[in-house]
Image (cartoon, rainbow, N blue to C red; front, top):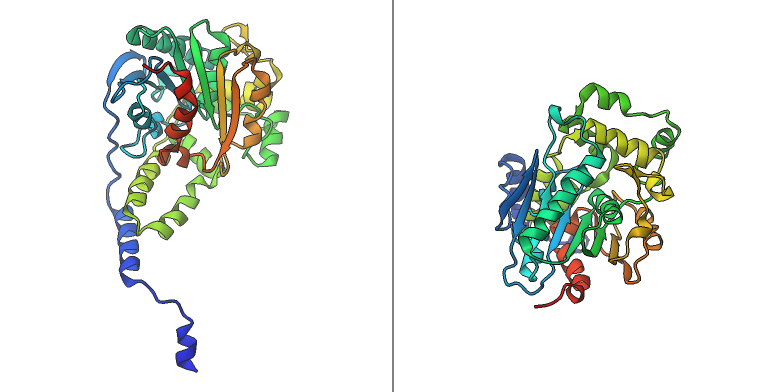
Length: 352
């Protein structure tokens, strides 16, 4: 009877289990991995922000790509090493890539607003990329809040934006991952971040990290994934890069922080057509270029419902909306981002 019962117990793969826990031990004890960026050069700087140029490995397209990431986190998540890099994936597929790293503001930058970032930093960065490339048009790709910024910019600028790609982009800020009571508190004004912004001037990276850690399971579930897949060396390599990034938060300008929470989260002005940047009203109907927006099925940071409204708000005749399998951060780390973007961009980027 005992032998029969034991026969129903699955055998343990001791080699696999030994490797699993050896890898977990290394993650807990070894220094964070170095991030090796895609080959490129700095072509422009403004204050703490840097514009990188990454040439295509074998250029296939005349129209280059300009990448915009969120202000809330450090942008190297889009270039975290071979096999995981959005930048590298696009250069491997034949695109010249321009990548704007916002940098982390310091105390002297406390009065930088969203208006400054969009009109003084992003617009001048795109101008520099156009001059450097010699291209007559450029494609813009925005990820997360970087997508919101890219959409606002495209609706305002006269620069030749040929294609606009937005990934996991928040447009409707009346919903989200914030607990309902917090969200209602923000909308009613009972929760207000003005005083926090005024006291600090620039919100420290430690506070930004604490906010995201408290709001999202993205900081908890990876440990479950690590333990279950620690026997896979390639997965562990990508996991360690992600872990380093999640704990390496950027600081945030106090003035921009106030705008973000008052104009977008509290008043939802972008969706309502009431947002003004540089004294001009932001109307997403002014977007006429070829347009592609996509969400991911397991996103725990930006819900699909937050992105959906924009597809009906833009005036583009050539527009596409899709949902892909994946999560918010894994979209960048698995290499899928470049695959999804290329599939749509390749026919719209003037093949050489």
